[in-house]
Image 1 (cartoon, rainbow, N blue to C red):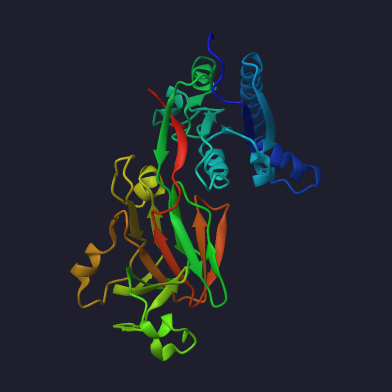
Image 2: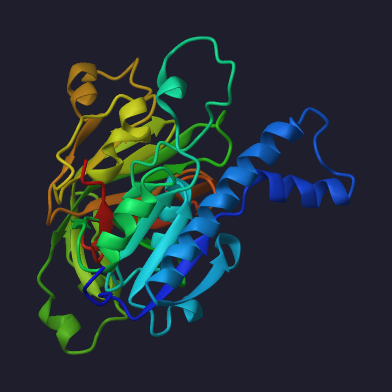
Amino acid sequence: MGTSPTFRRLLVVIKQTAYEEYSQLRARGQAPKALRWKRLESRYQTHQQCVNDLLDILKRNNLQYSCVNRVELDRQHLADVDLVIAIGGDGTVLSTAHFLDHGTIPLLGVNSDPMSDEDRIVKKKKKDERRSHGALCACTAANMKGKLPRILHGGGILSTRSRIQCIVKSTFSETRLVPALNDLLIANPSPAAVSRFRMGWLKSVKEPQQLALGSITDPSYLPKSQYGTVTRFGGNLFDVENSLNVWSSGLWISTATGSSAAMAAAGGKPMDVNSEDLQYLIREHMIENAPNKDEMILTNNDIIKKGEKLHMRWNSQKGRVFIDGSHLFHNIELGDEIMIDAEAPPLALYTRDD
């Protein structure tokens, strides 16, 4: 191409395939007996060919780059990087995005083993259909040679995707979790256990004069609400409004990006991908004996508008906040409070142009 590349230094994050993972287990005599090794090896070879083709494109465009396995990615790898390429599938894009928590470095996903048109047909499968849909990937192994150079030279569609901010307040600590691009699932670690929590909405409360004078250790100076003493996040006072006690299988929170993933499968609402709002859905809400059953059904699934803050108090002994899937989670326990909103830095993500 006639123009110079837009980017100076790239980081390539490479998926570790199931074949590689199970090969390590097989070396220790721990691999499952029912594995289809030929299928896994074929998938690995397809992925590896895509990796080789990608690196060849970067070399031909005279770009400096470094490579890291997805499971070894650390923030130190992002020093002086101005573009991150995640090669694998949607899972690799999601896990890589967790390290781009400031939203200043753009992310480009490459689906290394995409589904074919034949794989998408609903019928008895003769081939392996368990491939990534690549919804978060800008290009695939099949079209990368034409699309990737255009992006490297300033083309492509760079979108801004909203993410979920989640802060967990425990007895002695307050933890800001990595921003979620798709969704959060807050639930008991056991899928067979009931998830008990109270959910409501946070409203900012003006700091009392006594607190401003330094009497912050005396709880009598805190303002009261219908549900007791107001709460704090980041040193700011909030009142909890419209609280609802919930017995369920947990709570889904999704972005507009994630509304077509697990949220859709759970019965959620479709959202415009450019929306800055979030969506929540209570899983299997136990309301059989509630006197206001019809009213409670209306609260099962709704939108969290930009600027609104959802509050949860966890009332089960144990719980977990799962971030964009099952691999990354944060443990919570009885009495922990959670604040959820859309104030996380958005992600700069290259998206498909077809």
